[in-house]
Amino acid sequence: MSDMGSQGDGKKHGRLAEDEAALSERLRALGSRLDKAQADAKQQAQAGEPSSAGMQGMGLAVRVASEFASGVLVGAGLGWLVDKWLGTSPWGLIVLLLLGFVAGVLNVLRAVGKVAQPEARQKLRKTGRE
Image (cartoon, rainbow, N blue to C red):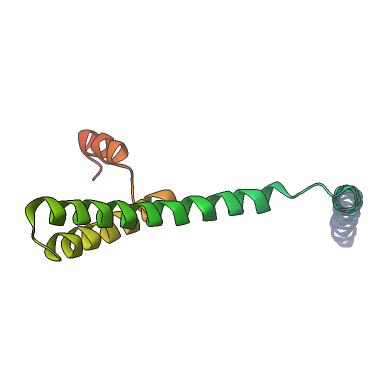
């Protein structure tokens, strides 16, 4: 019976050695890929190439700012025109400026993906998910 126990221990030890060897090989491969990625990043930084992630963030920031500003400016412009046309100064400007502010906030939320676009909402209603 003691022979069976020693054979089982030998198999366990053999499996552990194989697992350890496989783990060491994966660790070595990961280390080499990491070194290559770091070298590539360092070379890109030295070449002065701008990071695409930074440019995407800047593009989103400009888009969000312009979405908000355009909503407020269009609301104010329309309010001013309504006041001139109907002589209701300053109520048209106040009401439409507030509506422009709300539209600007809604556009910002749509731009950053916090609110679904109207077309996407209609598709969700048709499929019964909303």
